[in-house]
Amino acid sequence: MKYLLTKLKRLYRNSRISKKLFLAFSMMIAIPAIVVSFLFIRTQESQLYKDAMATGSSHVSRLNEQLRSRMGIIENASSTALNQKAFVDFIHSNMRGDGLRLVKFRQNQFEQMHNIIQSHEMISELSFYVDNPNLFEIWPEIYHYDKFQPQDYWVTLREEGGAAYRLFAFKDGEHTLSYYRLVRLQGQQQKLPTIMEIRAQHSVFFSDLLADSGGDFFSVVVDGTTPSRSVYNPEHIFAQNAGEELDKILGSIHQRLDMLQQSSPIKVKVGNQTYYALYRYIAPLNAYVVDIASHQALMKGPRSWYLLVVAITLCVLLLMLLLVSHTTRRIFRRLDRVLASMRKVRQGQLDAKIDTGLDKNETGDEIDEVAVSYNNMLDEIKHLMTQVVDKQLIAKNAQLHSLHSQINSHFLYNALESIRMLAEVQRQPAIADALVSLGSQLRYSMQWRSDTVALSEELANIHSYVRFINFMEGGSIVLTADLPQEVLRYTIPKMCMQPIVENAVHHAAPSGGSVHIQITVSVENDSLLLVEIRDDGAGVDPEMLSSLQAVLRGDSDSPIVTSKNGLGLENVHKRIQLHYGKDCGLWIDSVQGAYTCVTIRLPLENVNLGGW
Image (cartoon, rainbow, N blue to C red; front, side, top):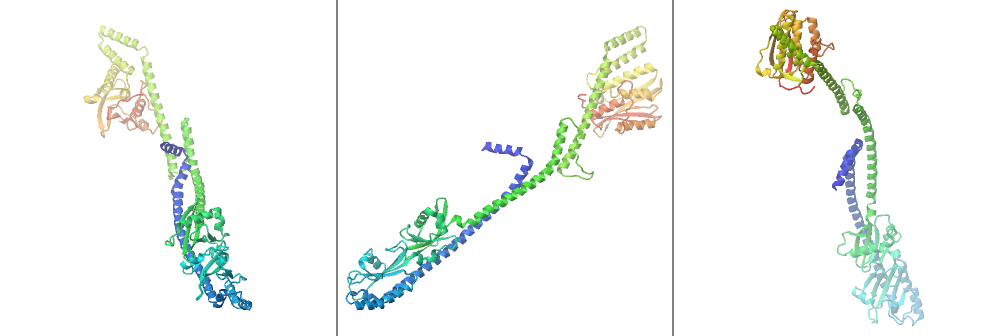
């Protein structure tokens, strides 16, 4: 079971969204519709069953009344025949003694009796069985008692009150109903009593009662003691459909018949069919009149409704399939464009944007939103890749610069050391100090053990640079940097302050002149550390200042002029922004003839740069 569930989940997961939508619509619409329809049909079946049972009960009651009425007609006919006293007396007299008397009997009493028989259509024959040795058997209405079988039946008639019906007569009983009645003659002692028999053909007596009326019920009159003996219309559609199983059906129903429970229908199952039976007991006839119907016949209407519901459901599902297919095809045609663009991007085509066809003020649906977000993502990826490339290029340039500077570095250090020693031997301390400052700068610029240094190291390098410049150009450059000890331990990108000081030395004062450079720090918004490098030199031309500020804001593509060491303001600005973001970098402010101030914006948290 668990394997099957896993298999179904995997199959559902790998199915196309159109199939999932179709399945969802089917479960939401078709299945509830089918359930409601089938519940409605079952309700109709229940109601149809109740109506059919009510109709069947009414029909079987009507059959019972009609049969009793016809039996009453036969009893009235028997009473009329027995009222013919002259006829009854003559057949018990010596019929052979006087021929003239016999002729008169034939013309009068016998003719009257014959007319009584002819006046009742249901009566096929009326006979008297008389224990008279002088009886003359010349007519079918008069027989000697020894022709009656069984001869002791008169005892049964006496026990039943003198009269009785038999659904199947003793003589030719397969198709005949009979009524037997004892005839008693006052003042005459016969050895055996006379029995009157009235016979009626089944086809006449039951006639239209058992005819096929086109209804769902099949009417049968079943003998009360022998289930195999019954009267029904063999041409009825039920009998023809049942065929050889009809005897089994009647036998199963007969076992359930109960004269005390005549109001409850009987339900039996024969083979793969279910049958219902309603019945009434006819006591004088010792038989049951039964109406039988098959469940299939009663429910043929709802059965056709089932097919109709299935057909309608299939049509609805087909329409839903077409609608879902059309809708999803239109939706997924746009989604396929998104997938095609993703495949191109996977192959390296970052310019494979999705054409949404939307105006500026249009938002579109969810797929359009995905497409717009996807296009924005491509732009961001291209921007980040450009930043990475720029970062790598700057790092490579710095490494190449460092490598180039390290060429023959030992030779330079040894040469500078030899010149310094020579200057001290010749008692030239100024030259010796200048060489020490130059050596310190060379070592600092050429040894890139890491990407960051402490602010104190950068500041020491700047002091060496200022001393060397004062010696070389005979100027009076003053550097002031009274910074707190905790700030001196702050980690900053290497060579981010030296190019700014170099610009101040070269541009703030003429050769040999004096300029005051002051370095201070402050905190902005508890998030940024501001390092200000201010000089009181000539300042920057307003037009040049505006151009520099535009470049620092990113509004201009013109490069910032770099200093002589190759790591100028543009290099510093880009390095800081690549590692710390757009909120960090350089900013320059100046008033011509008064001052120039370059501010380095770094994150307040002391975070190392990581890698280039």
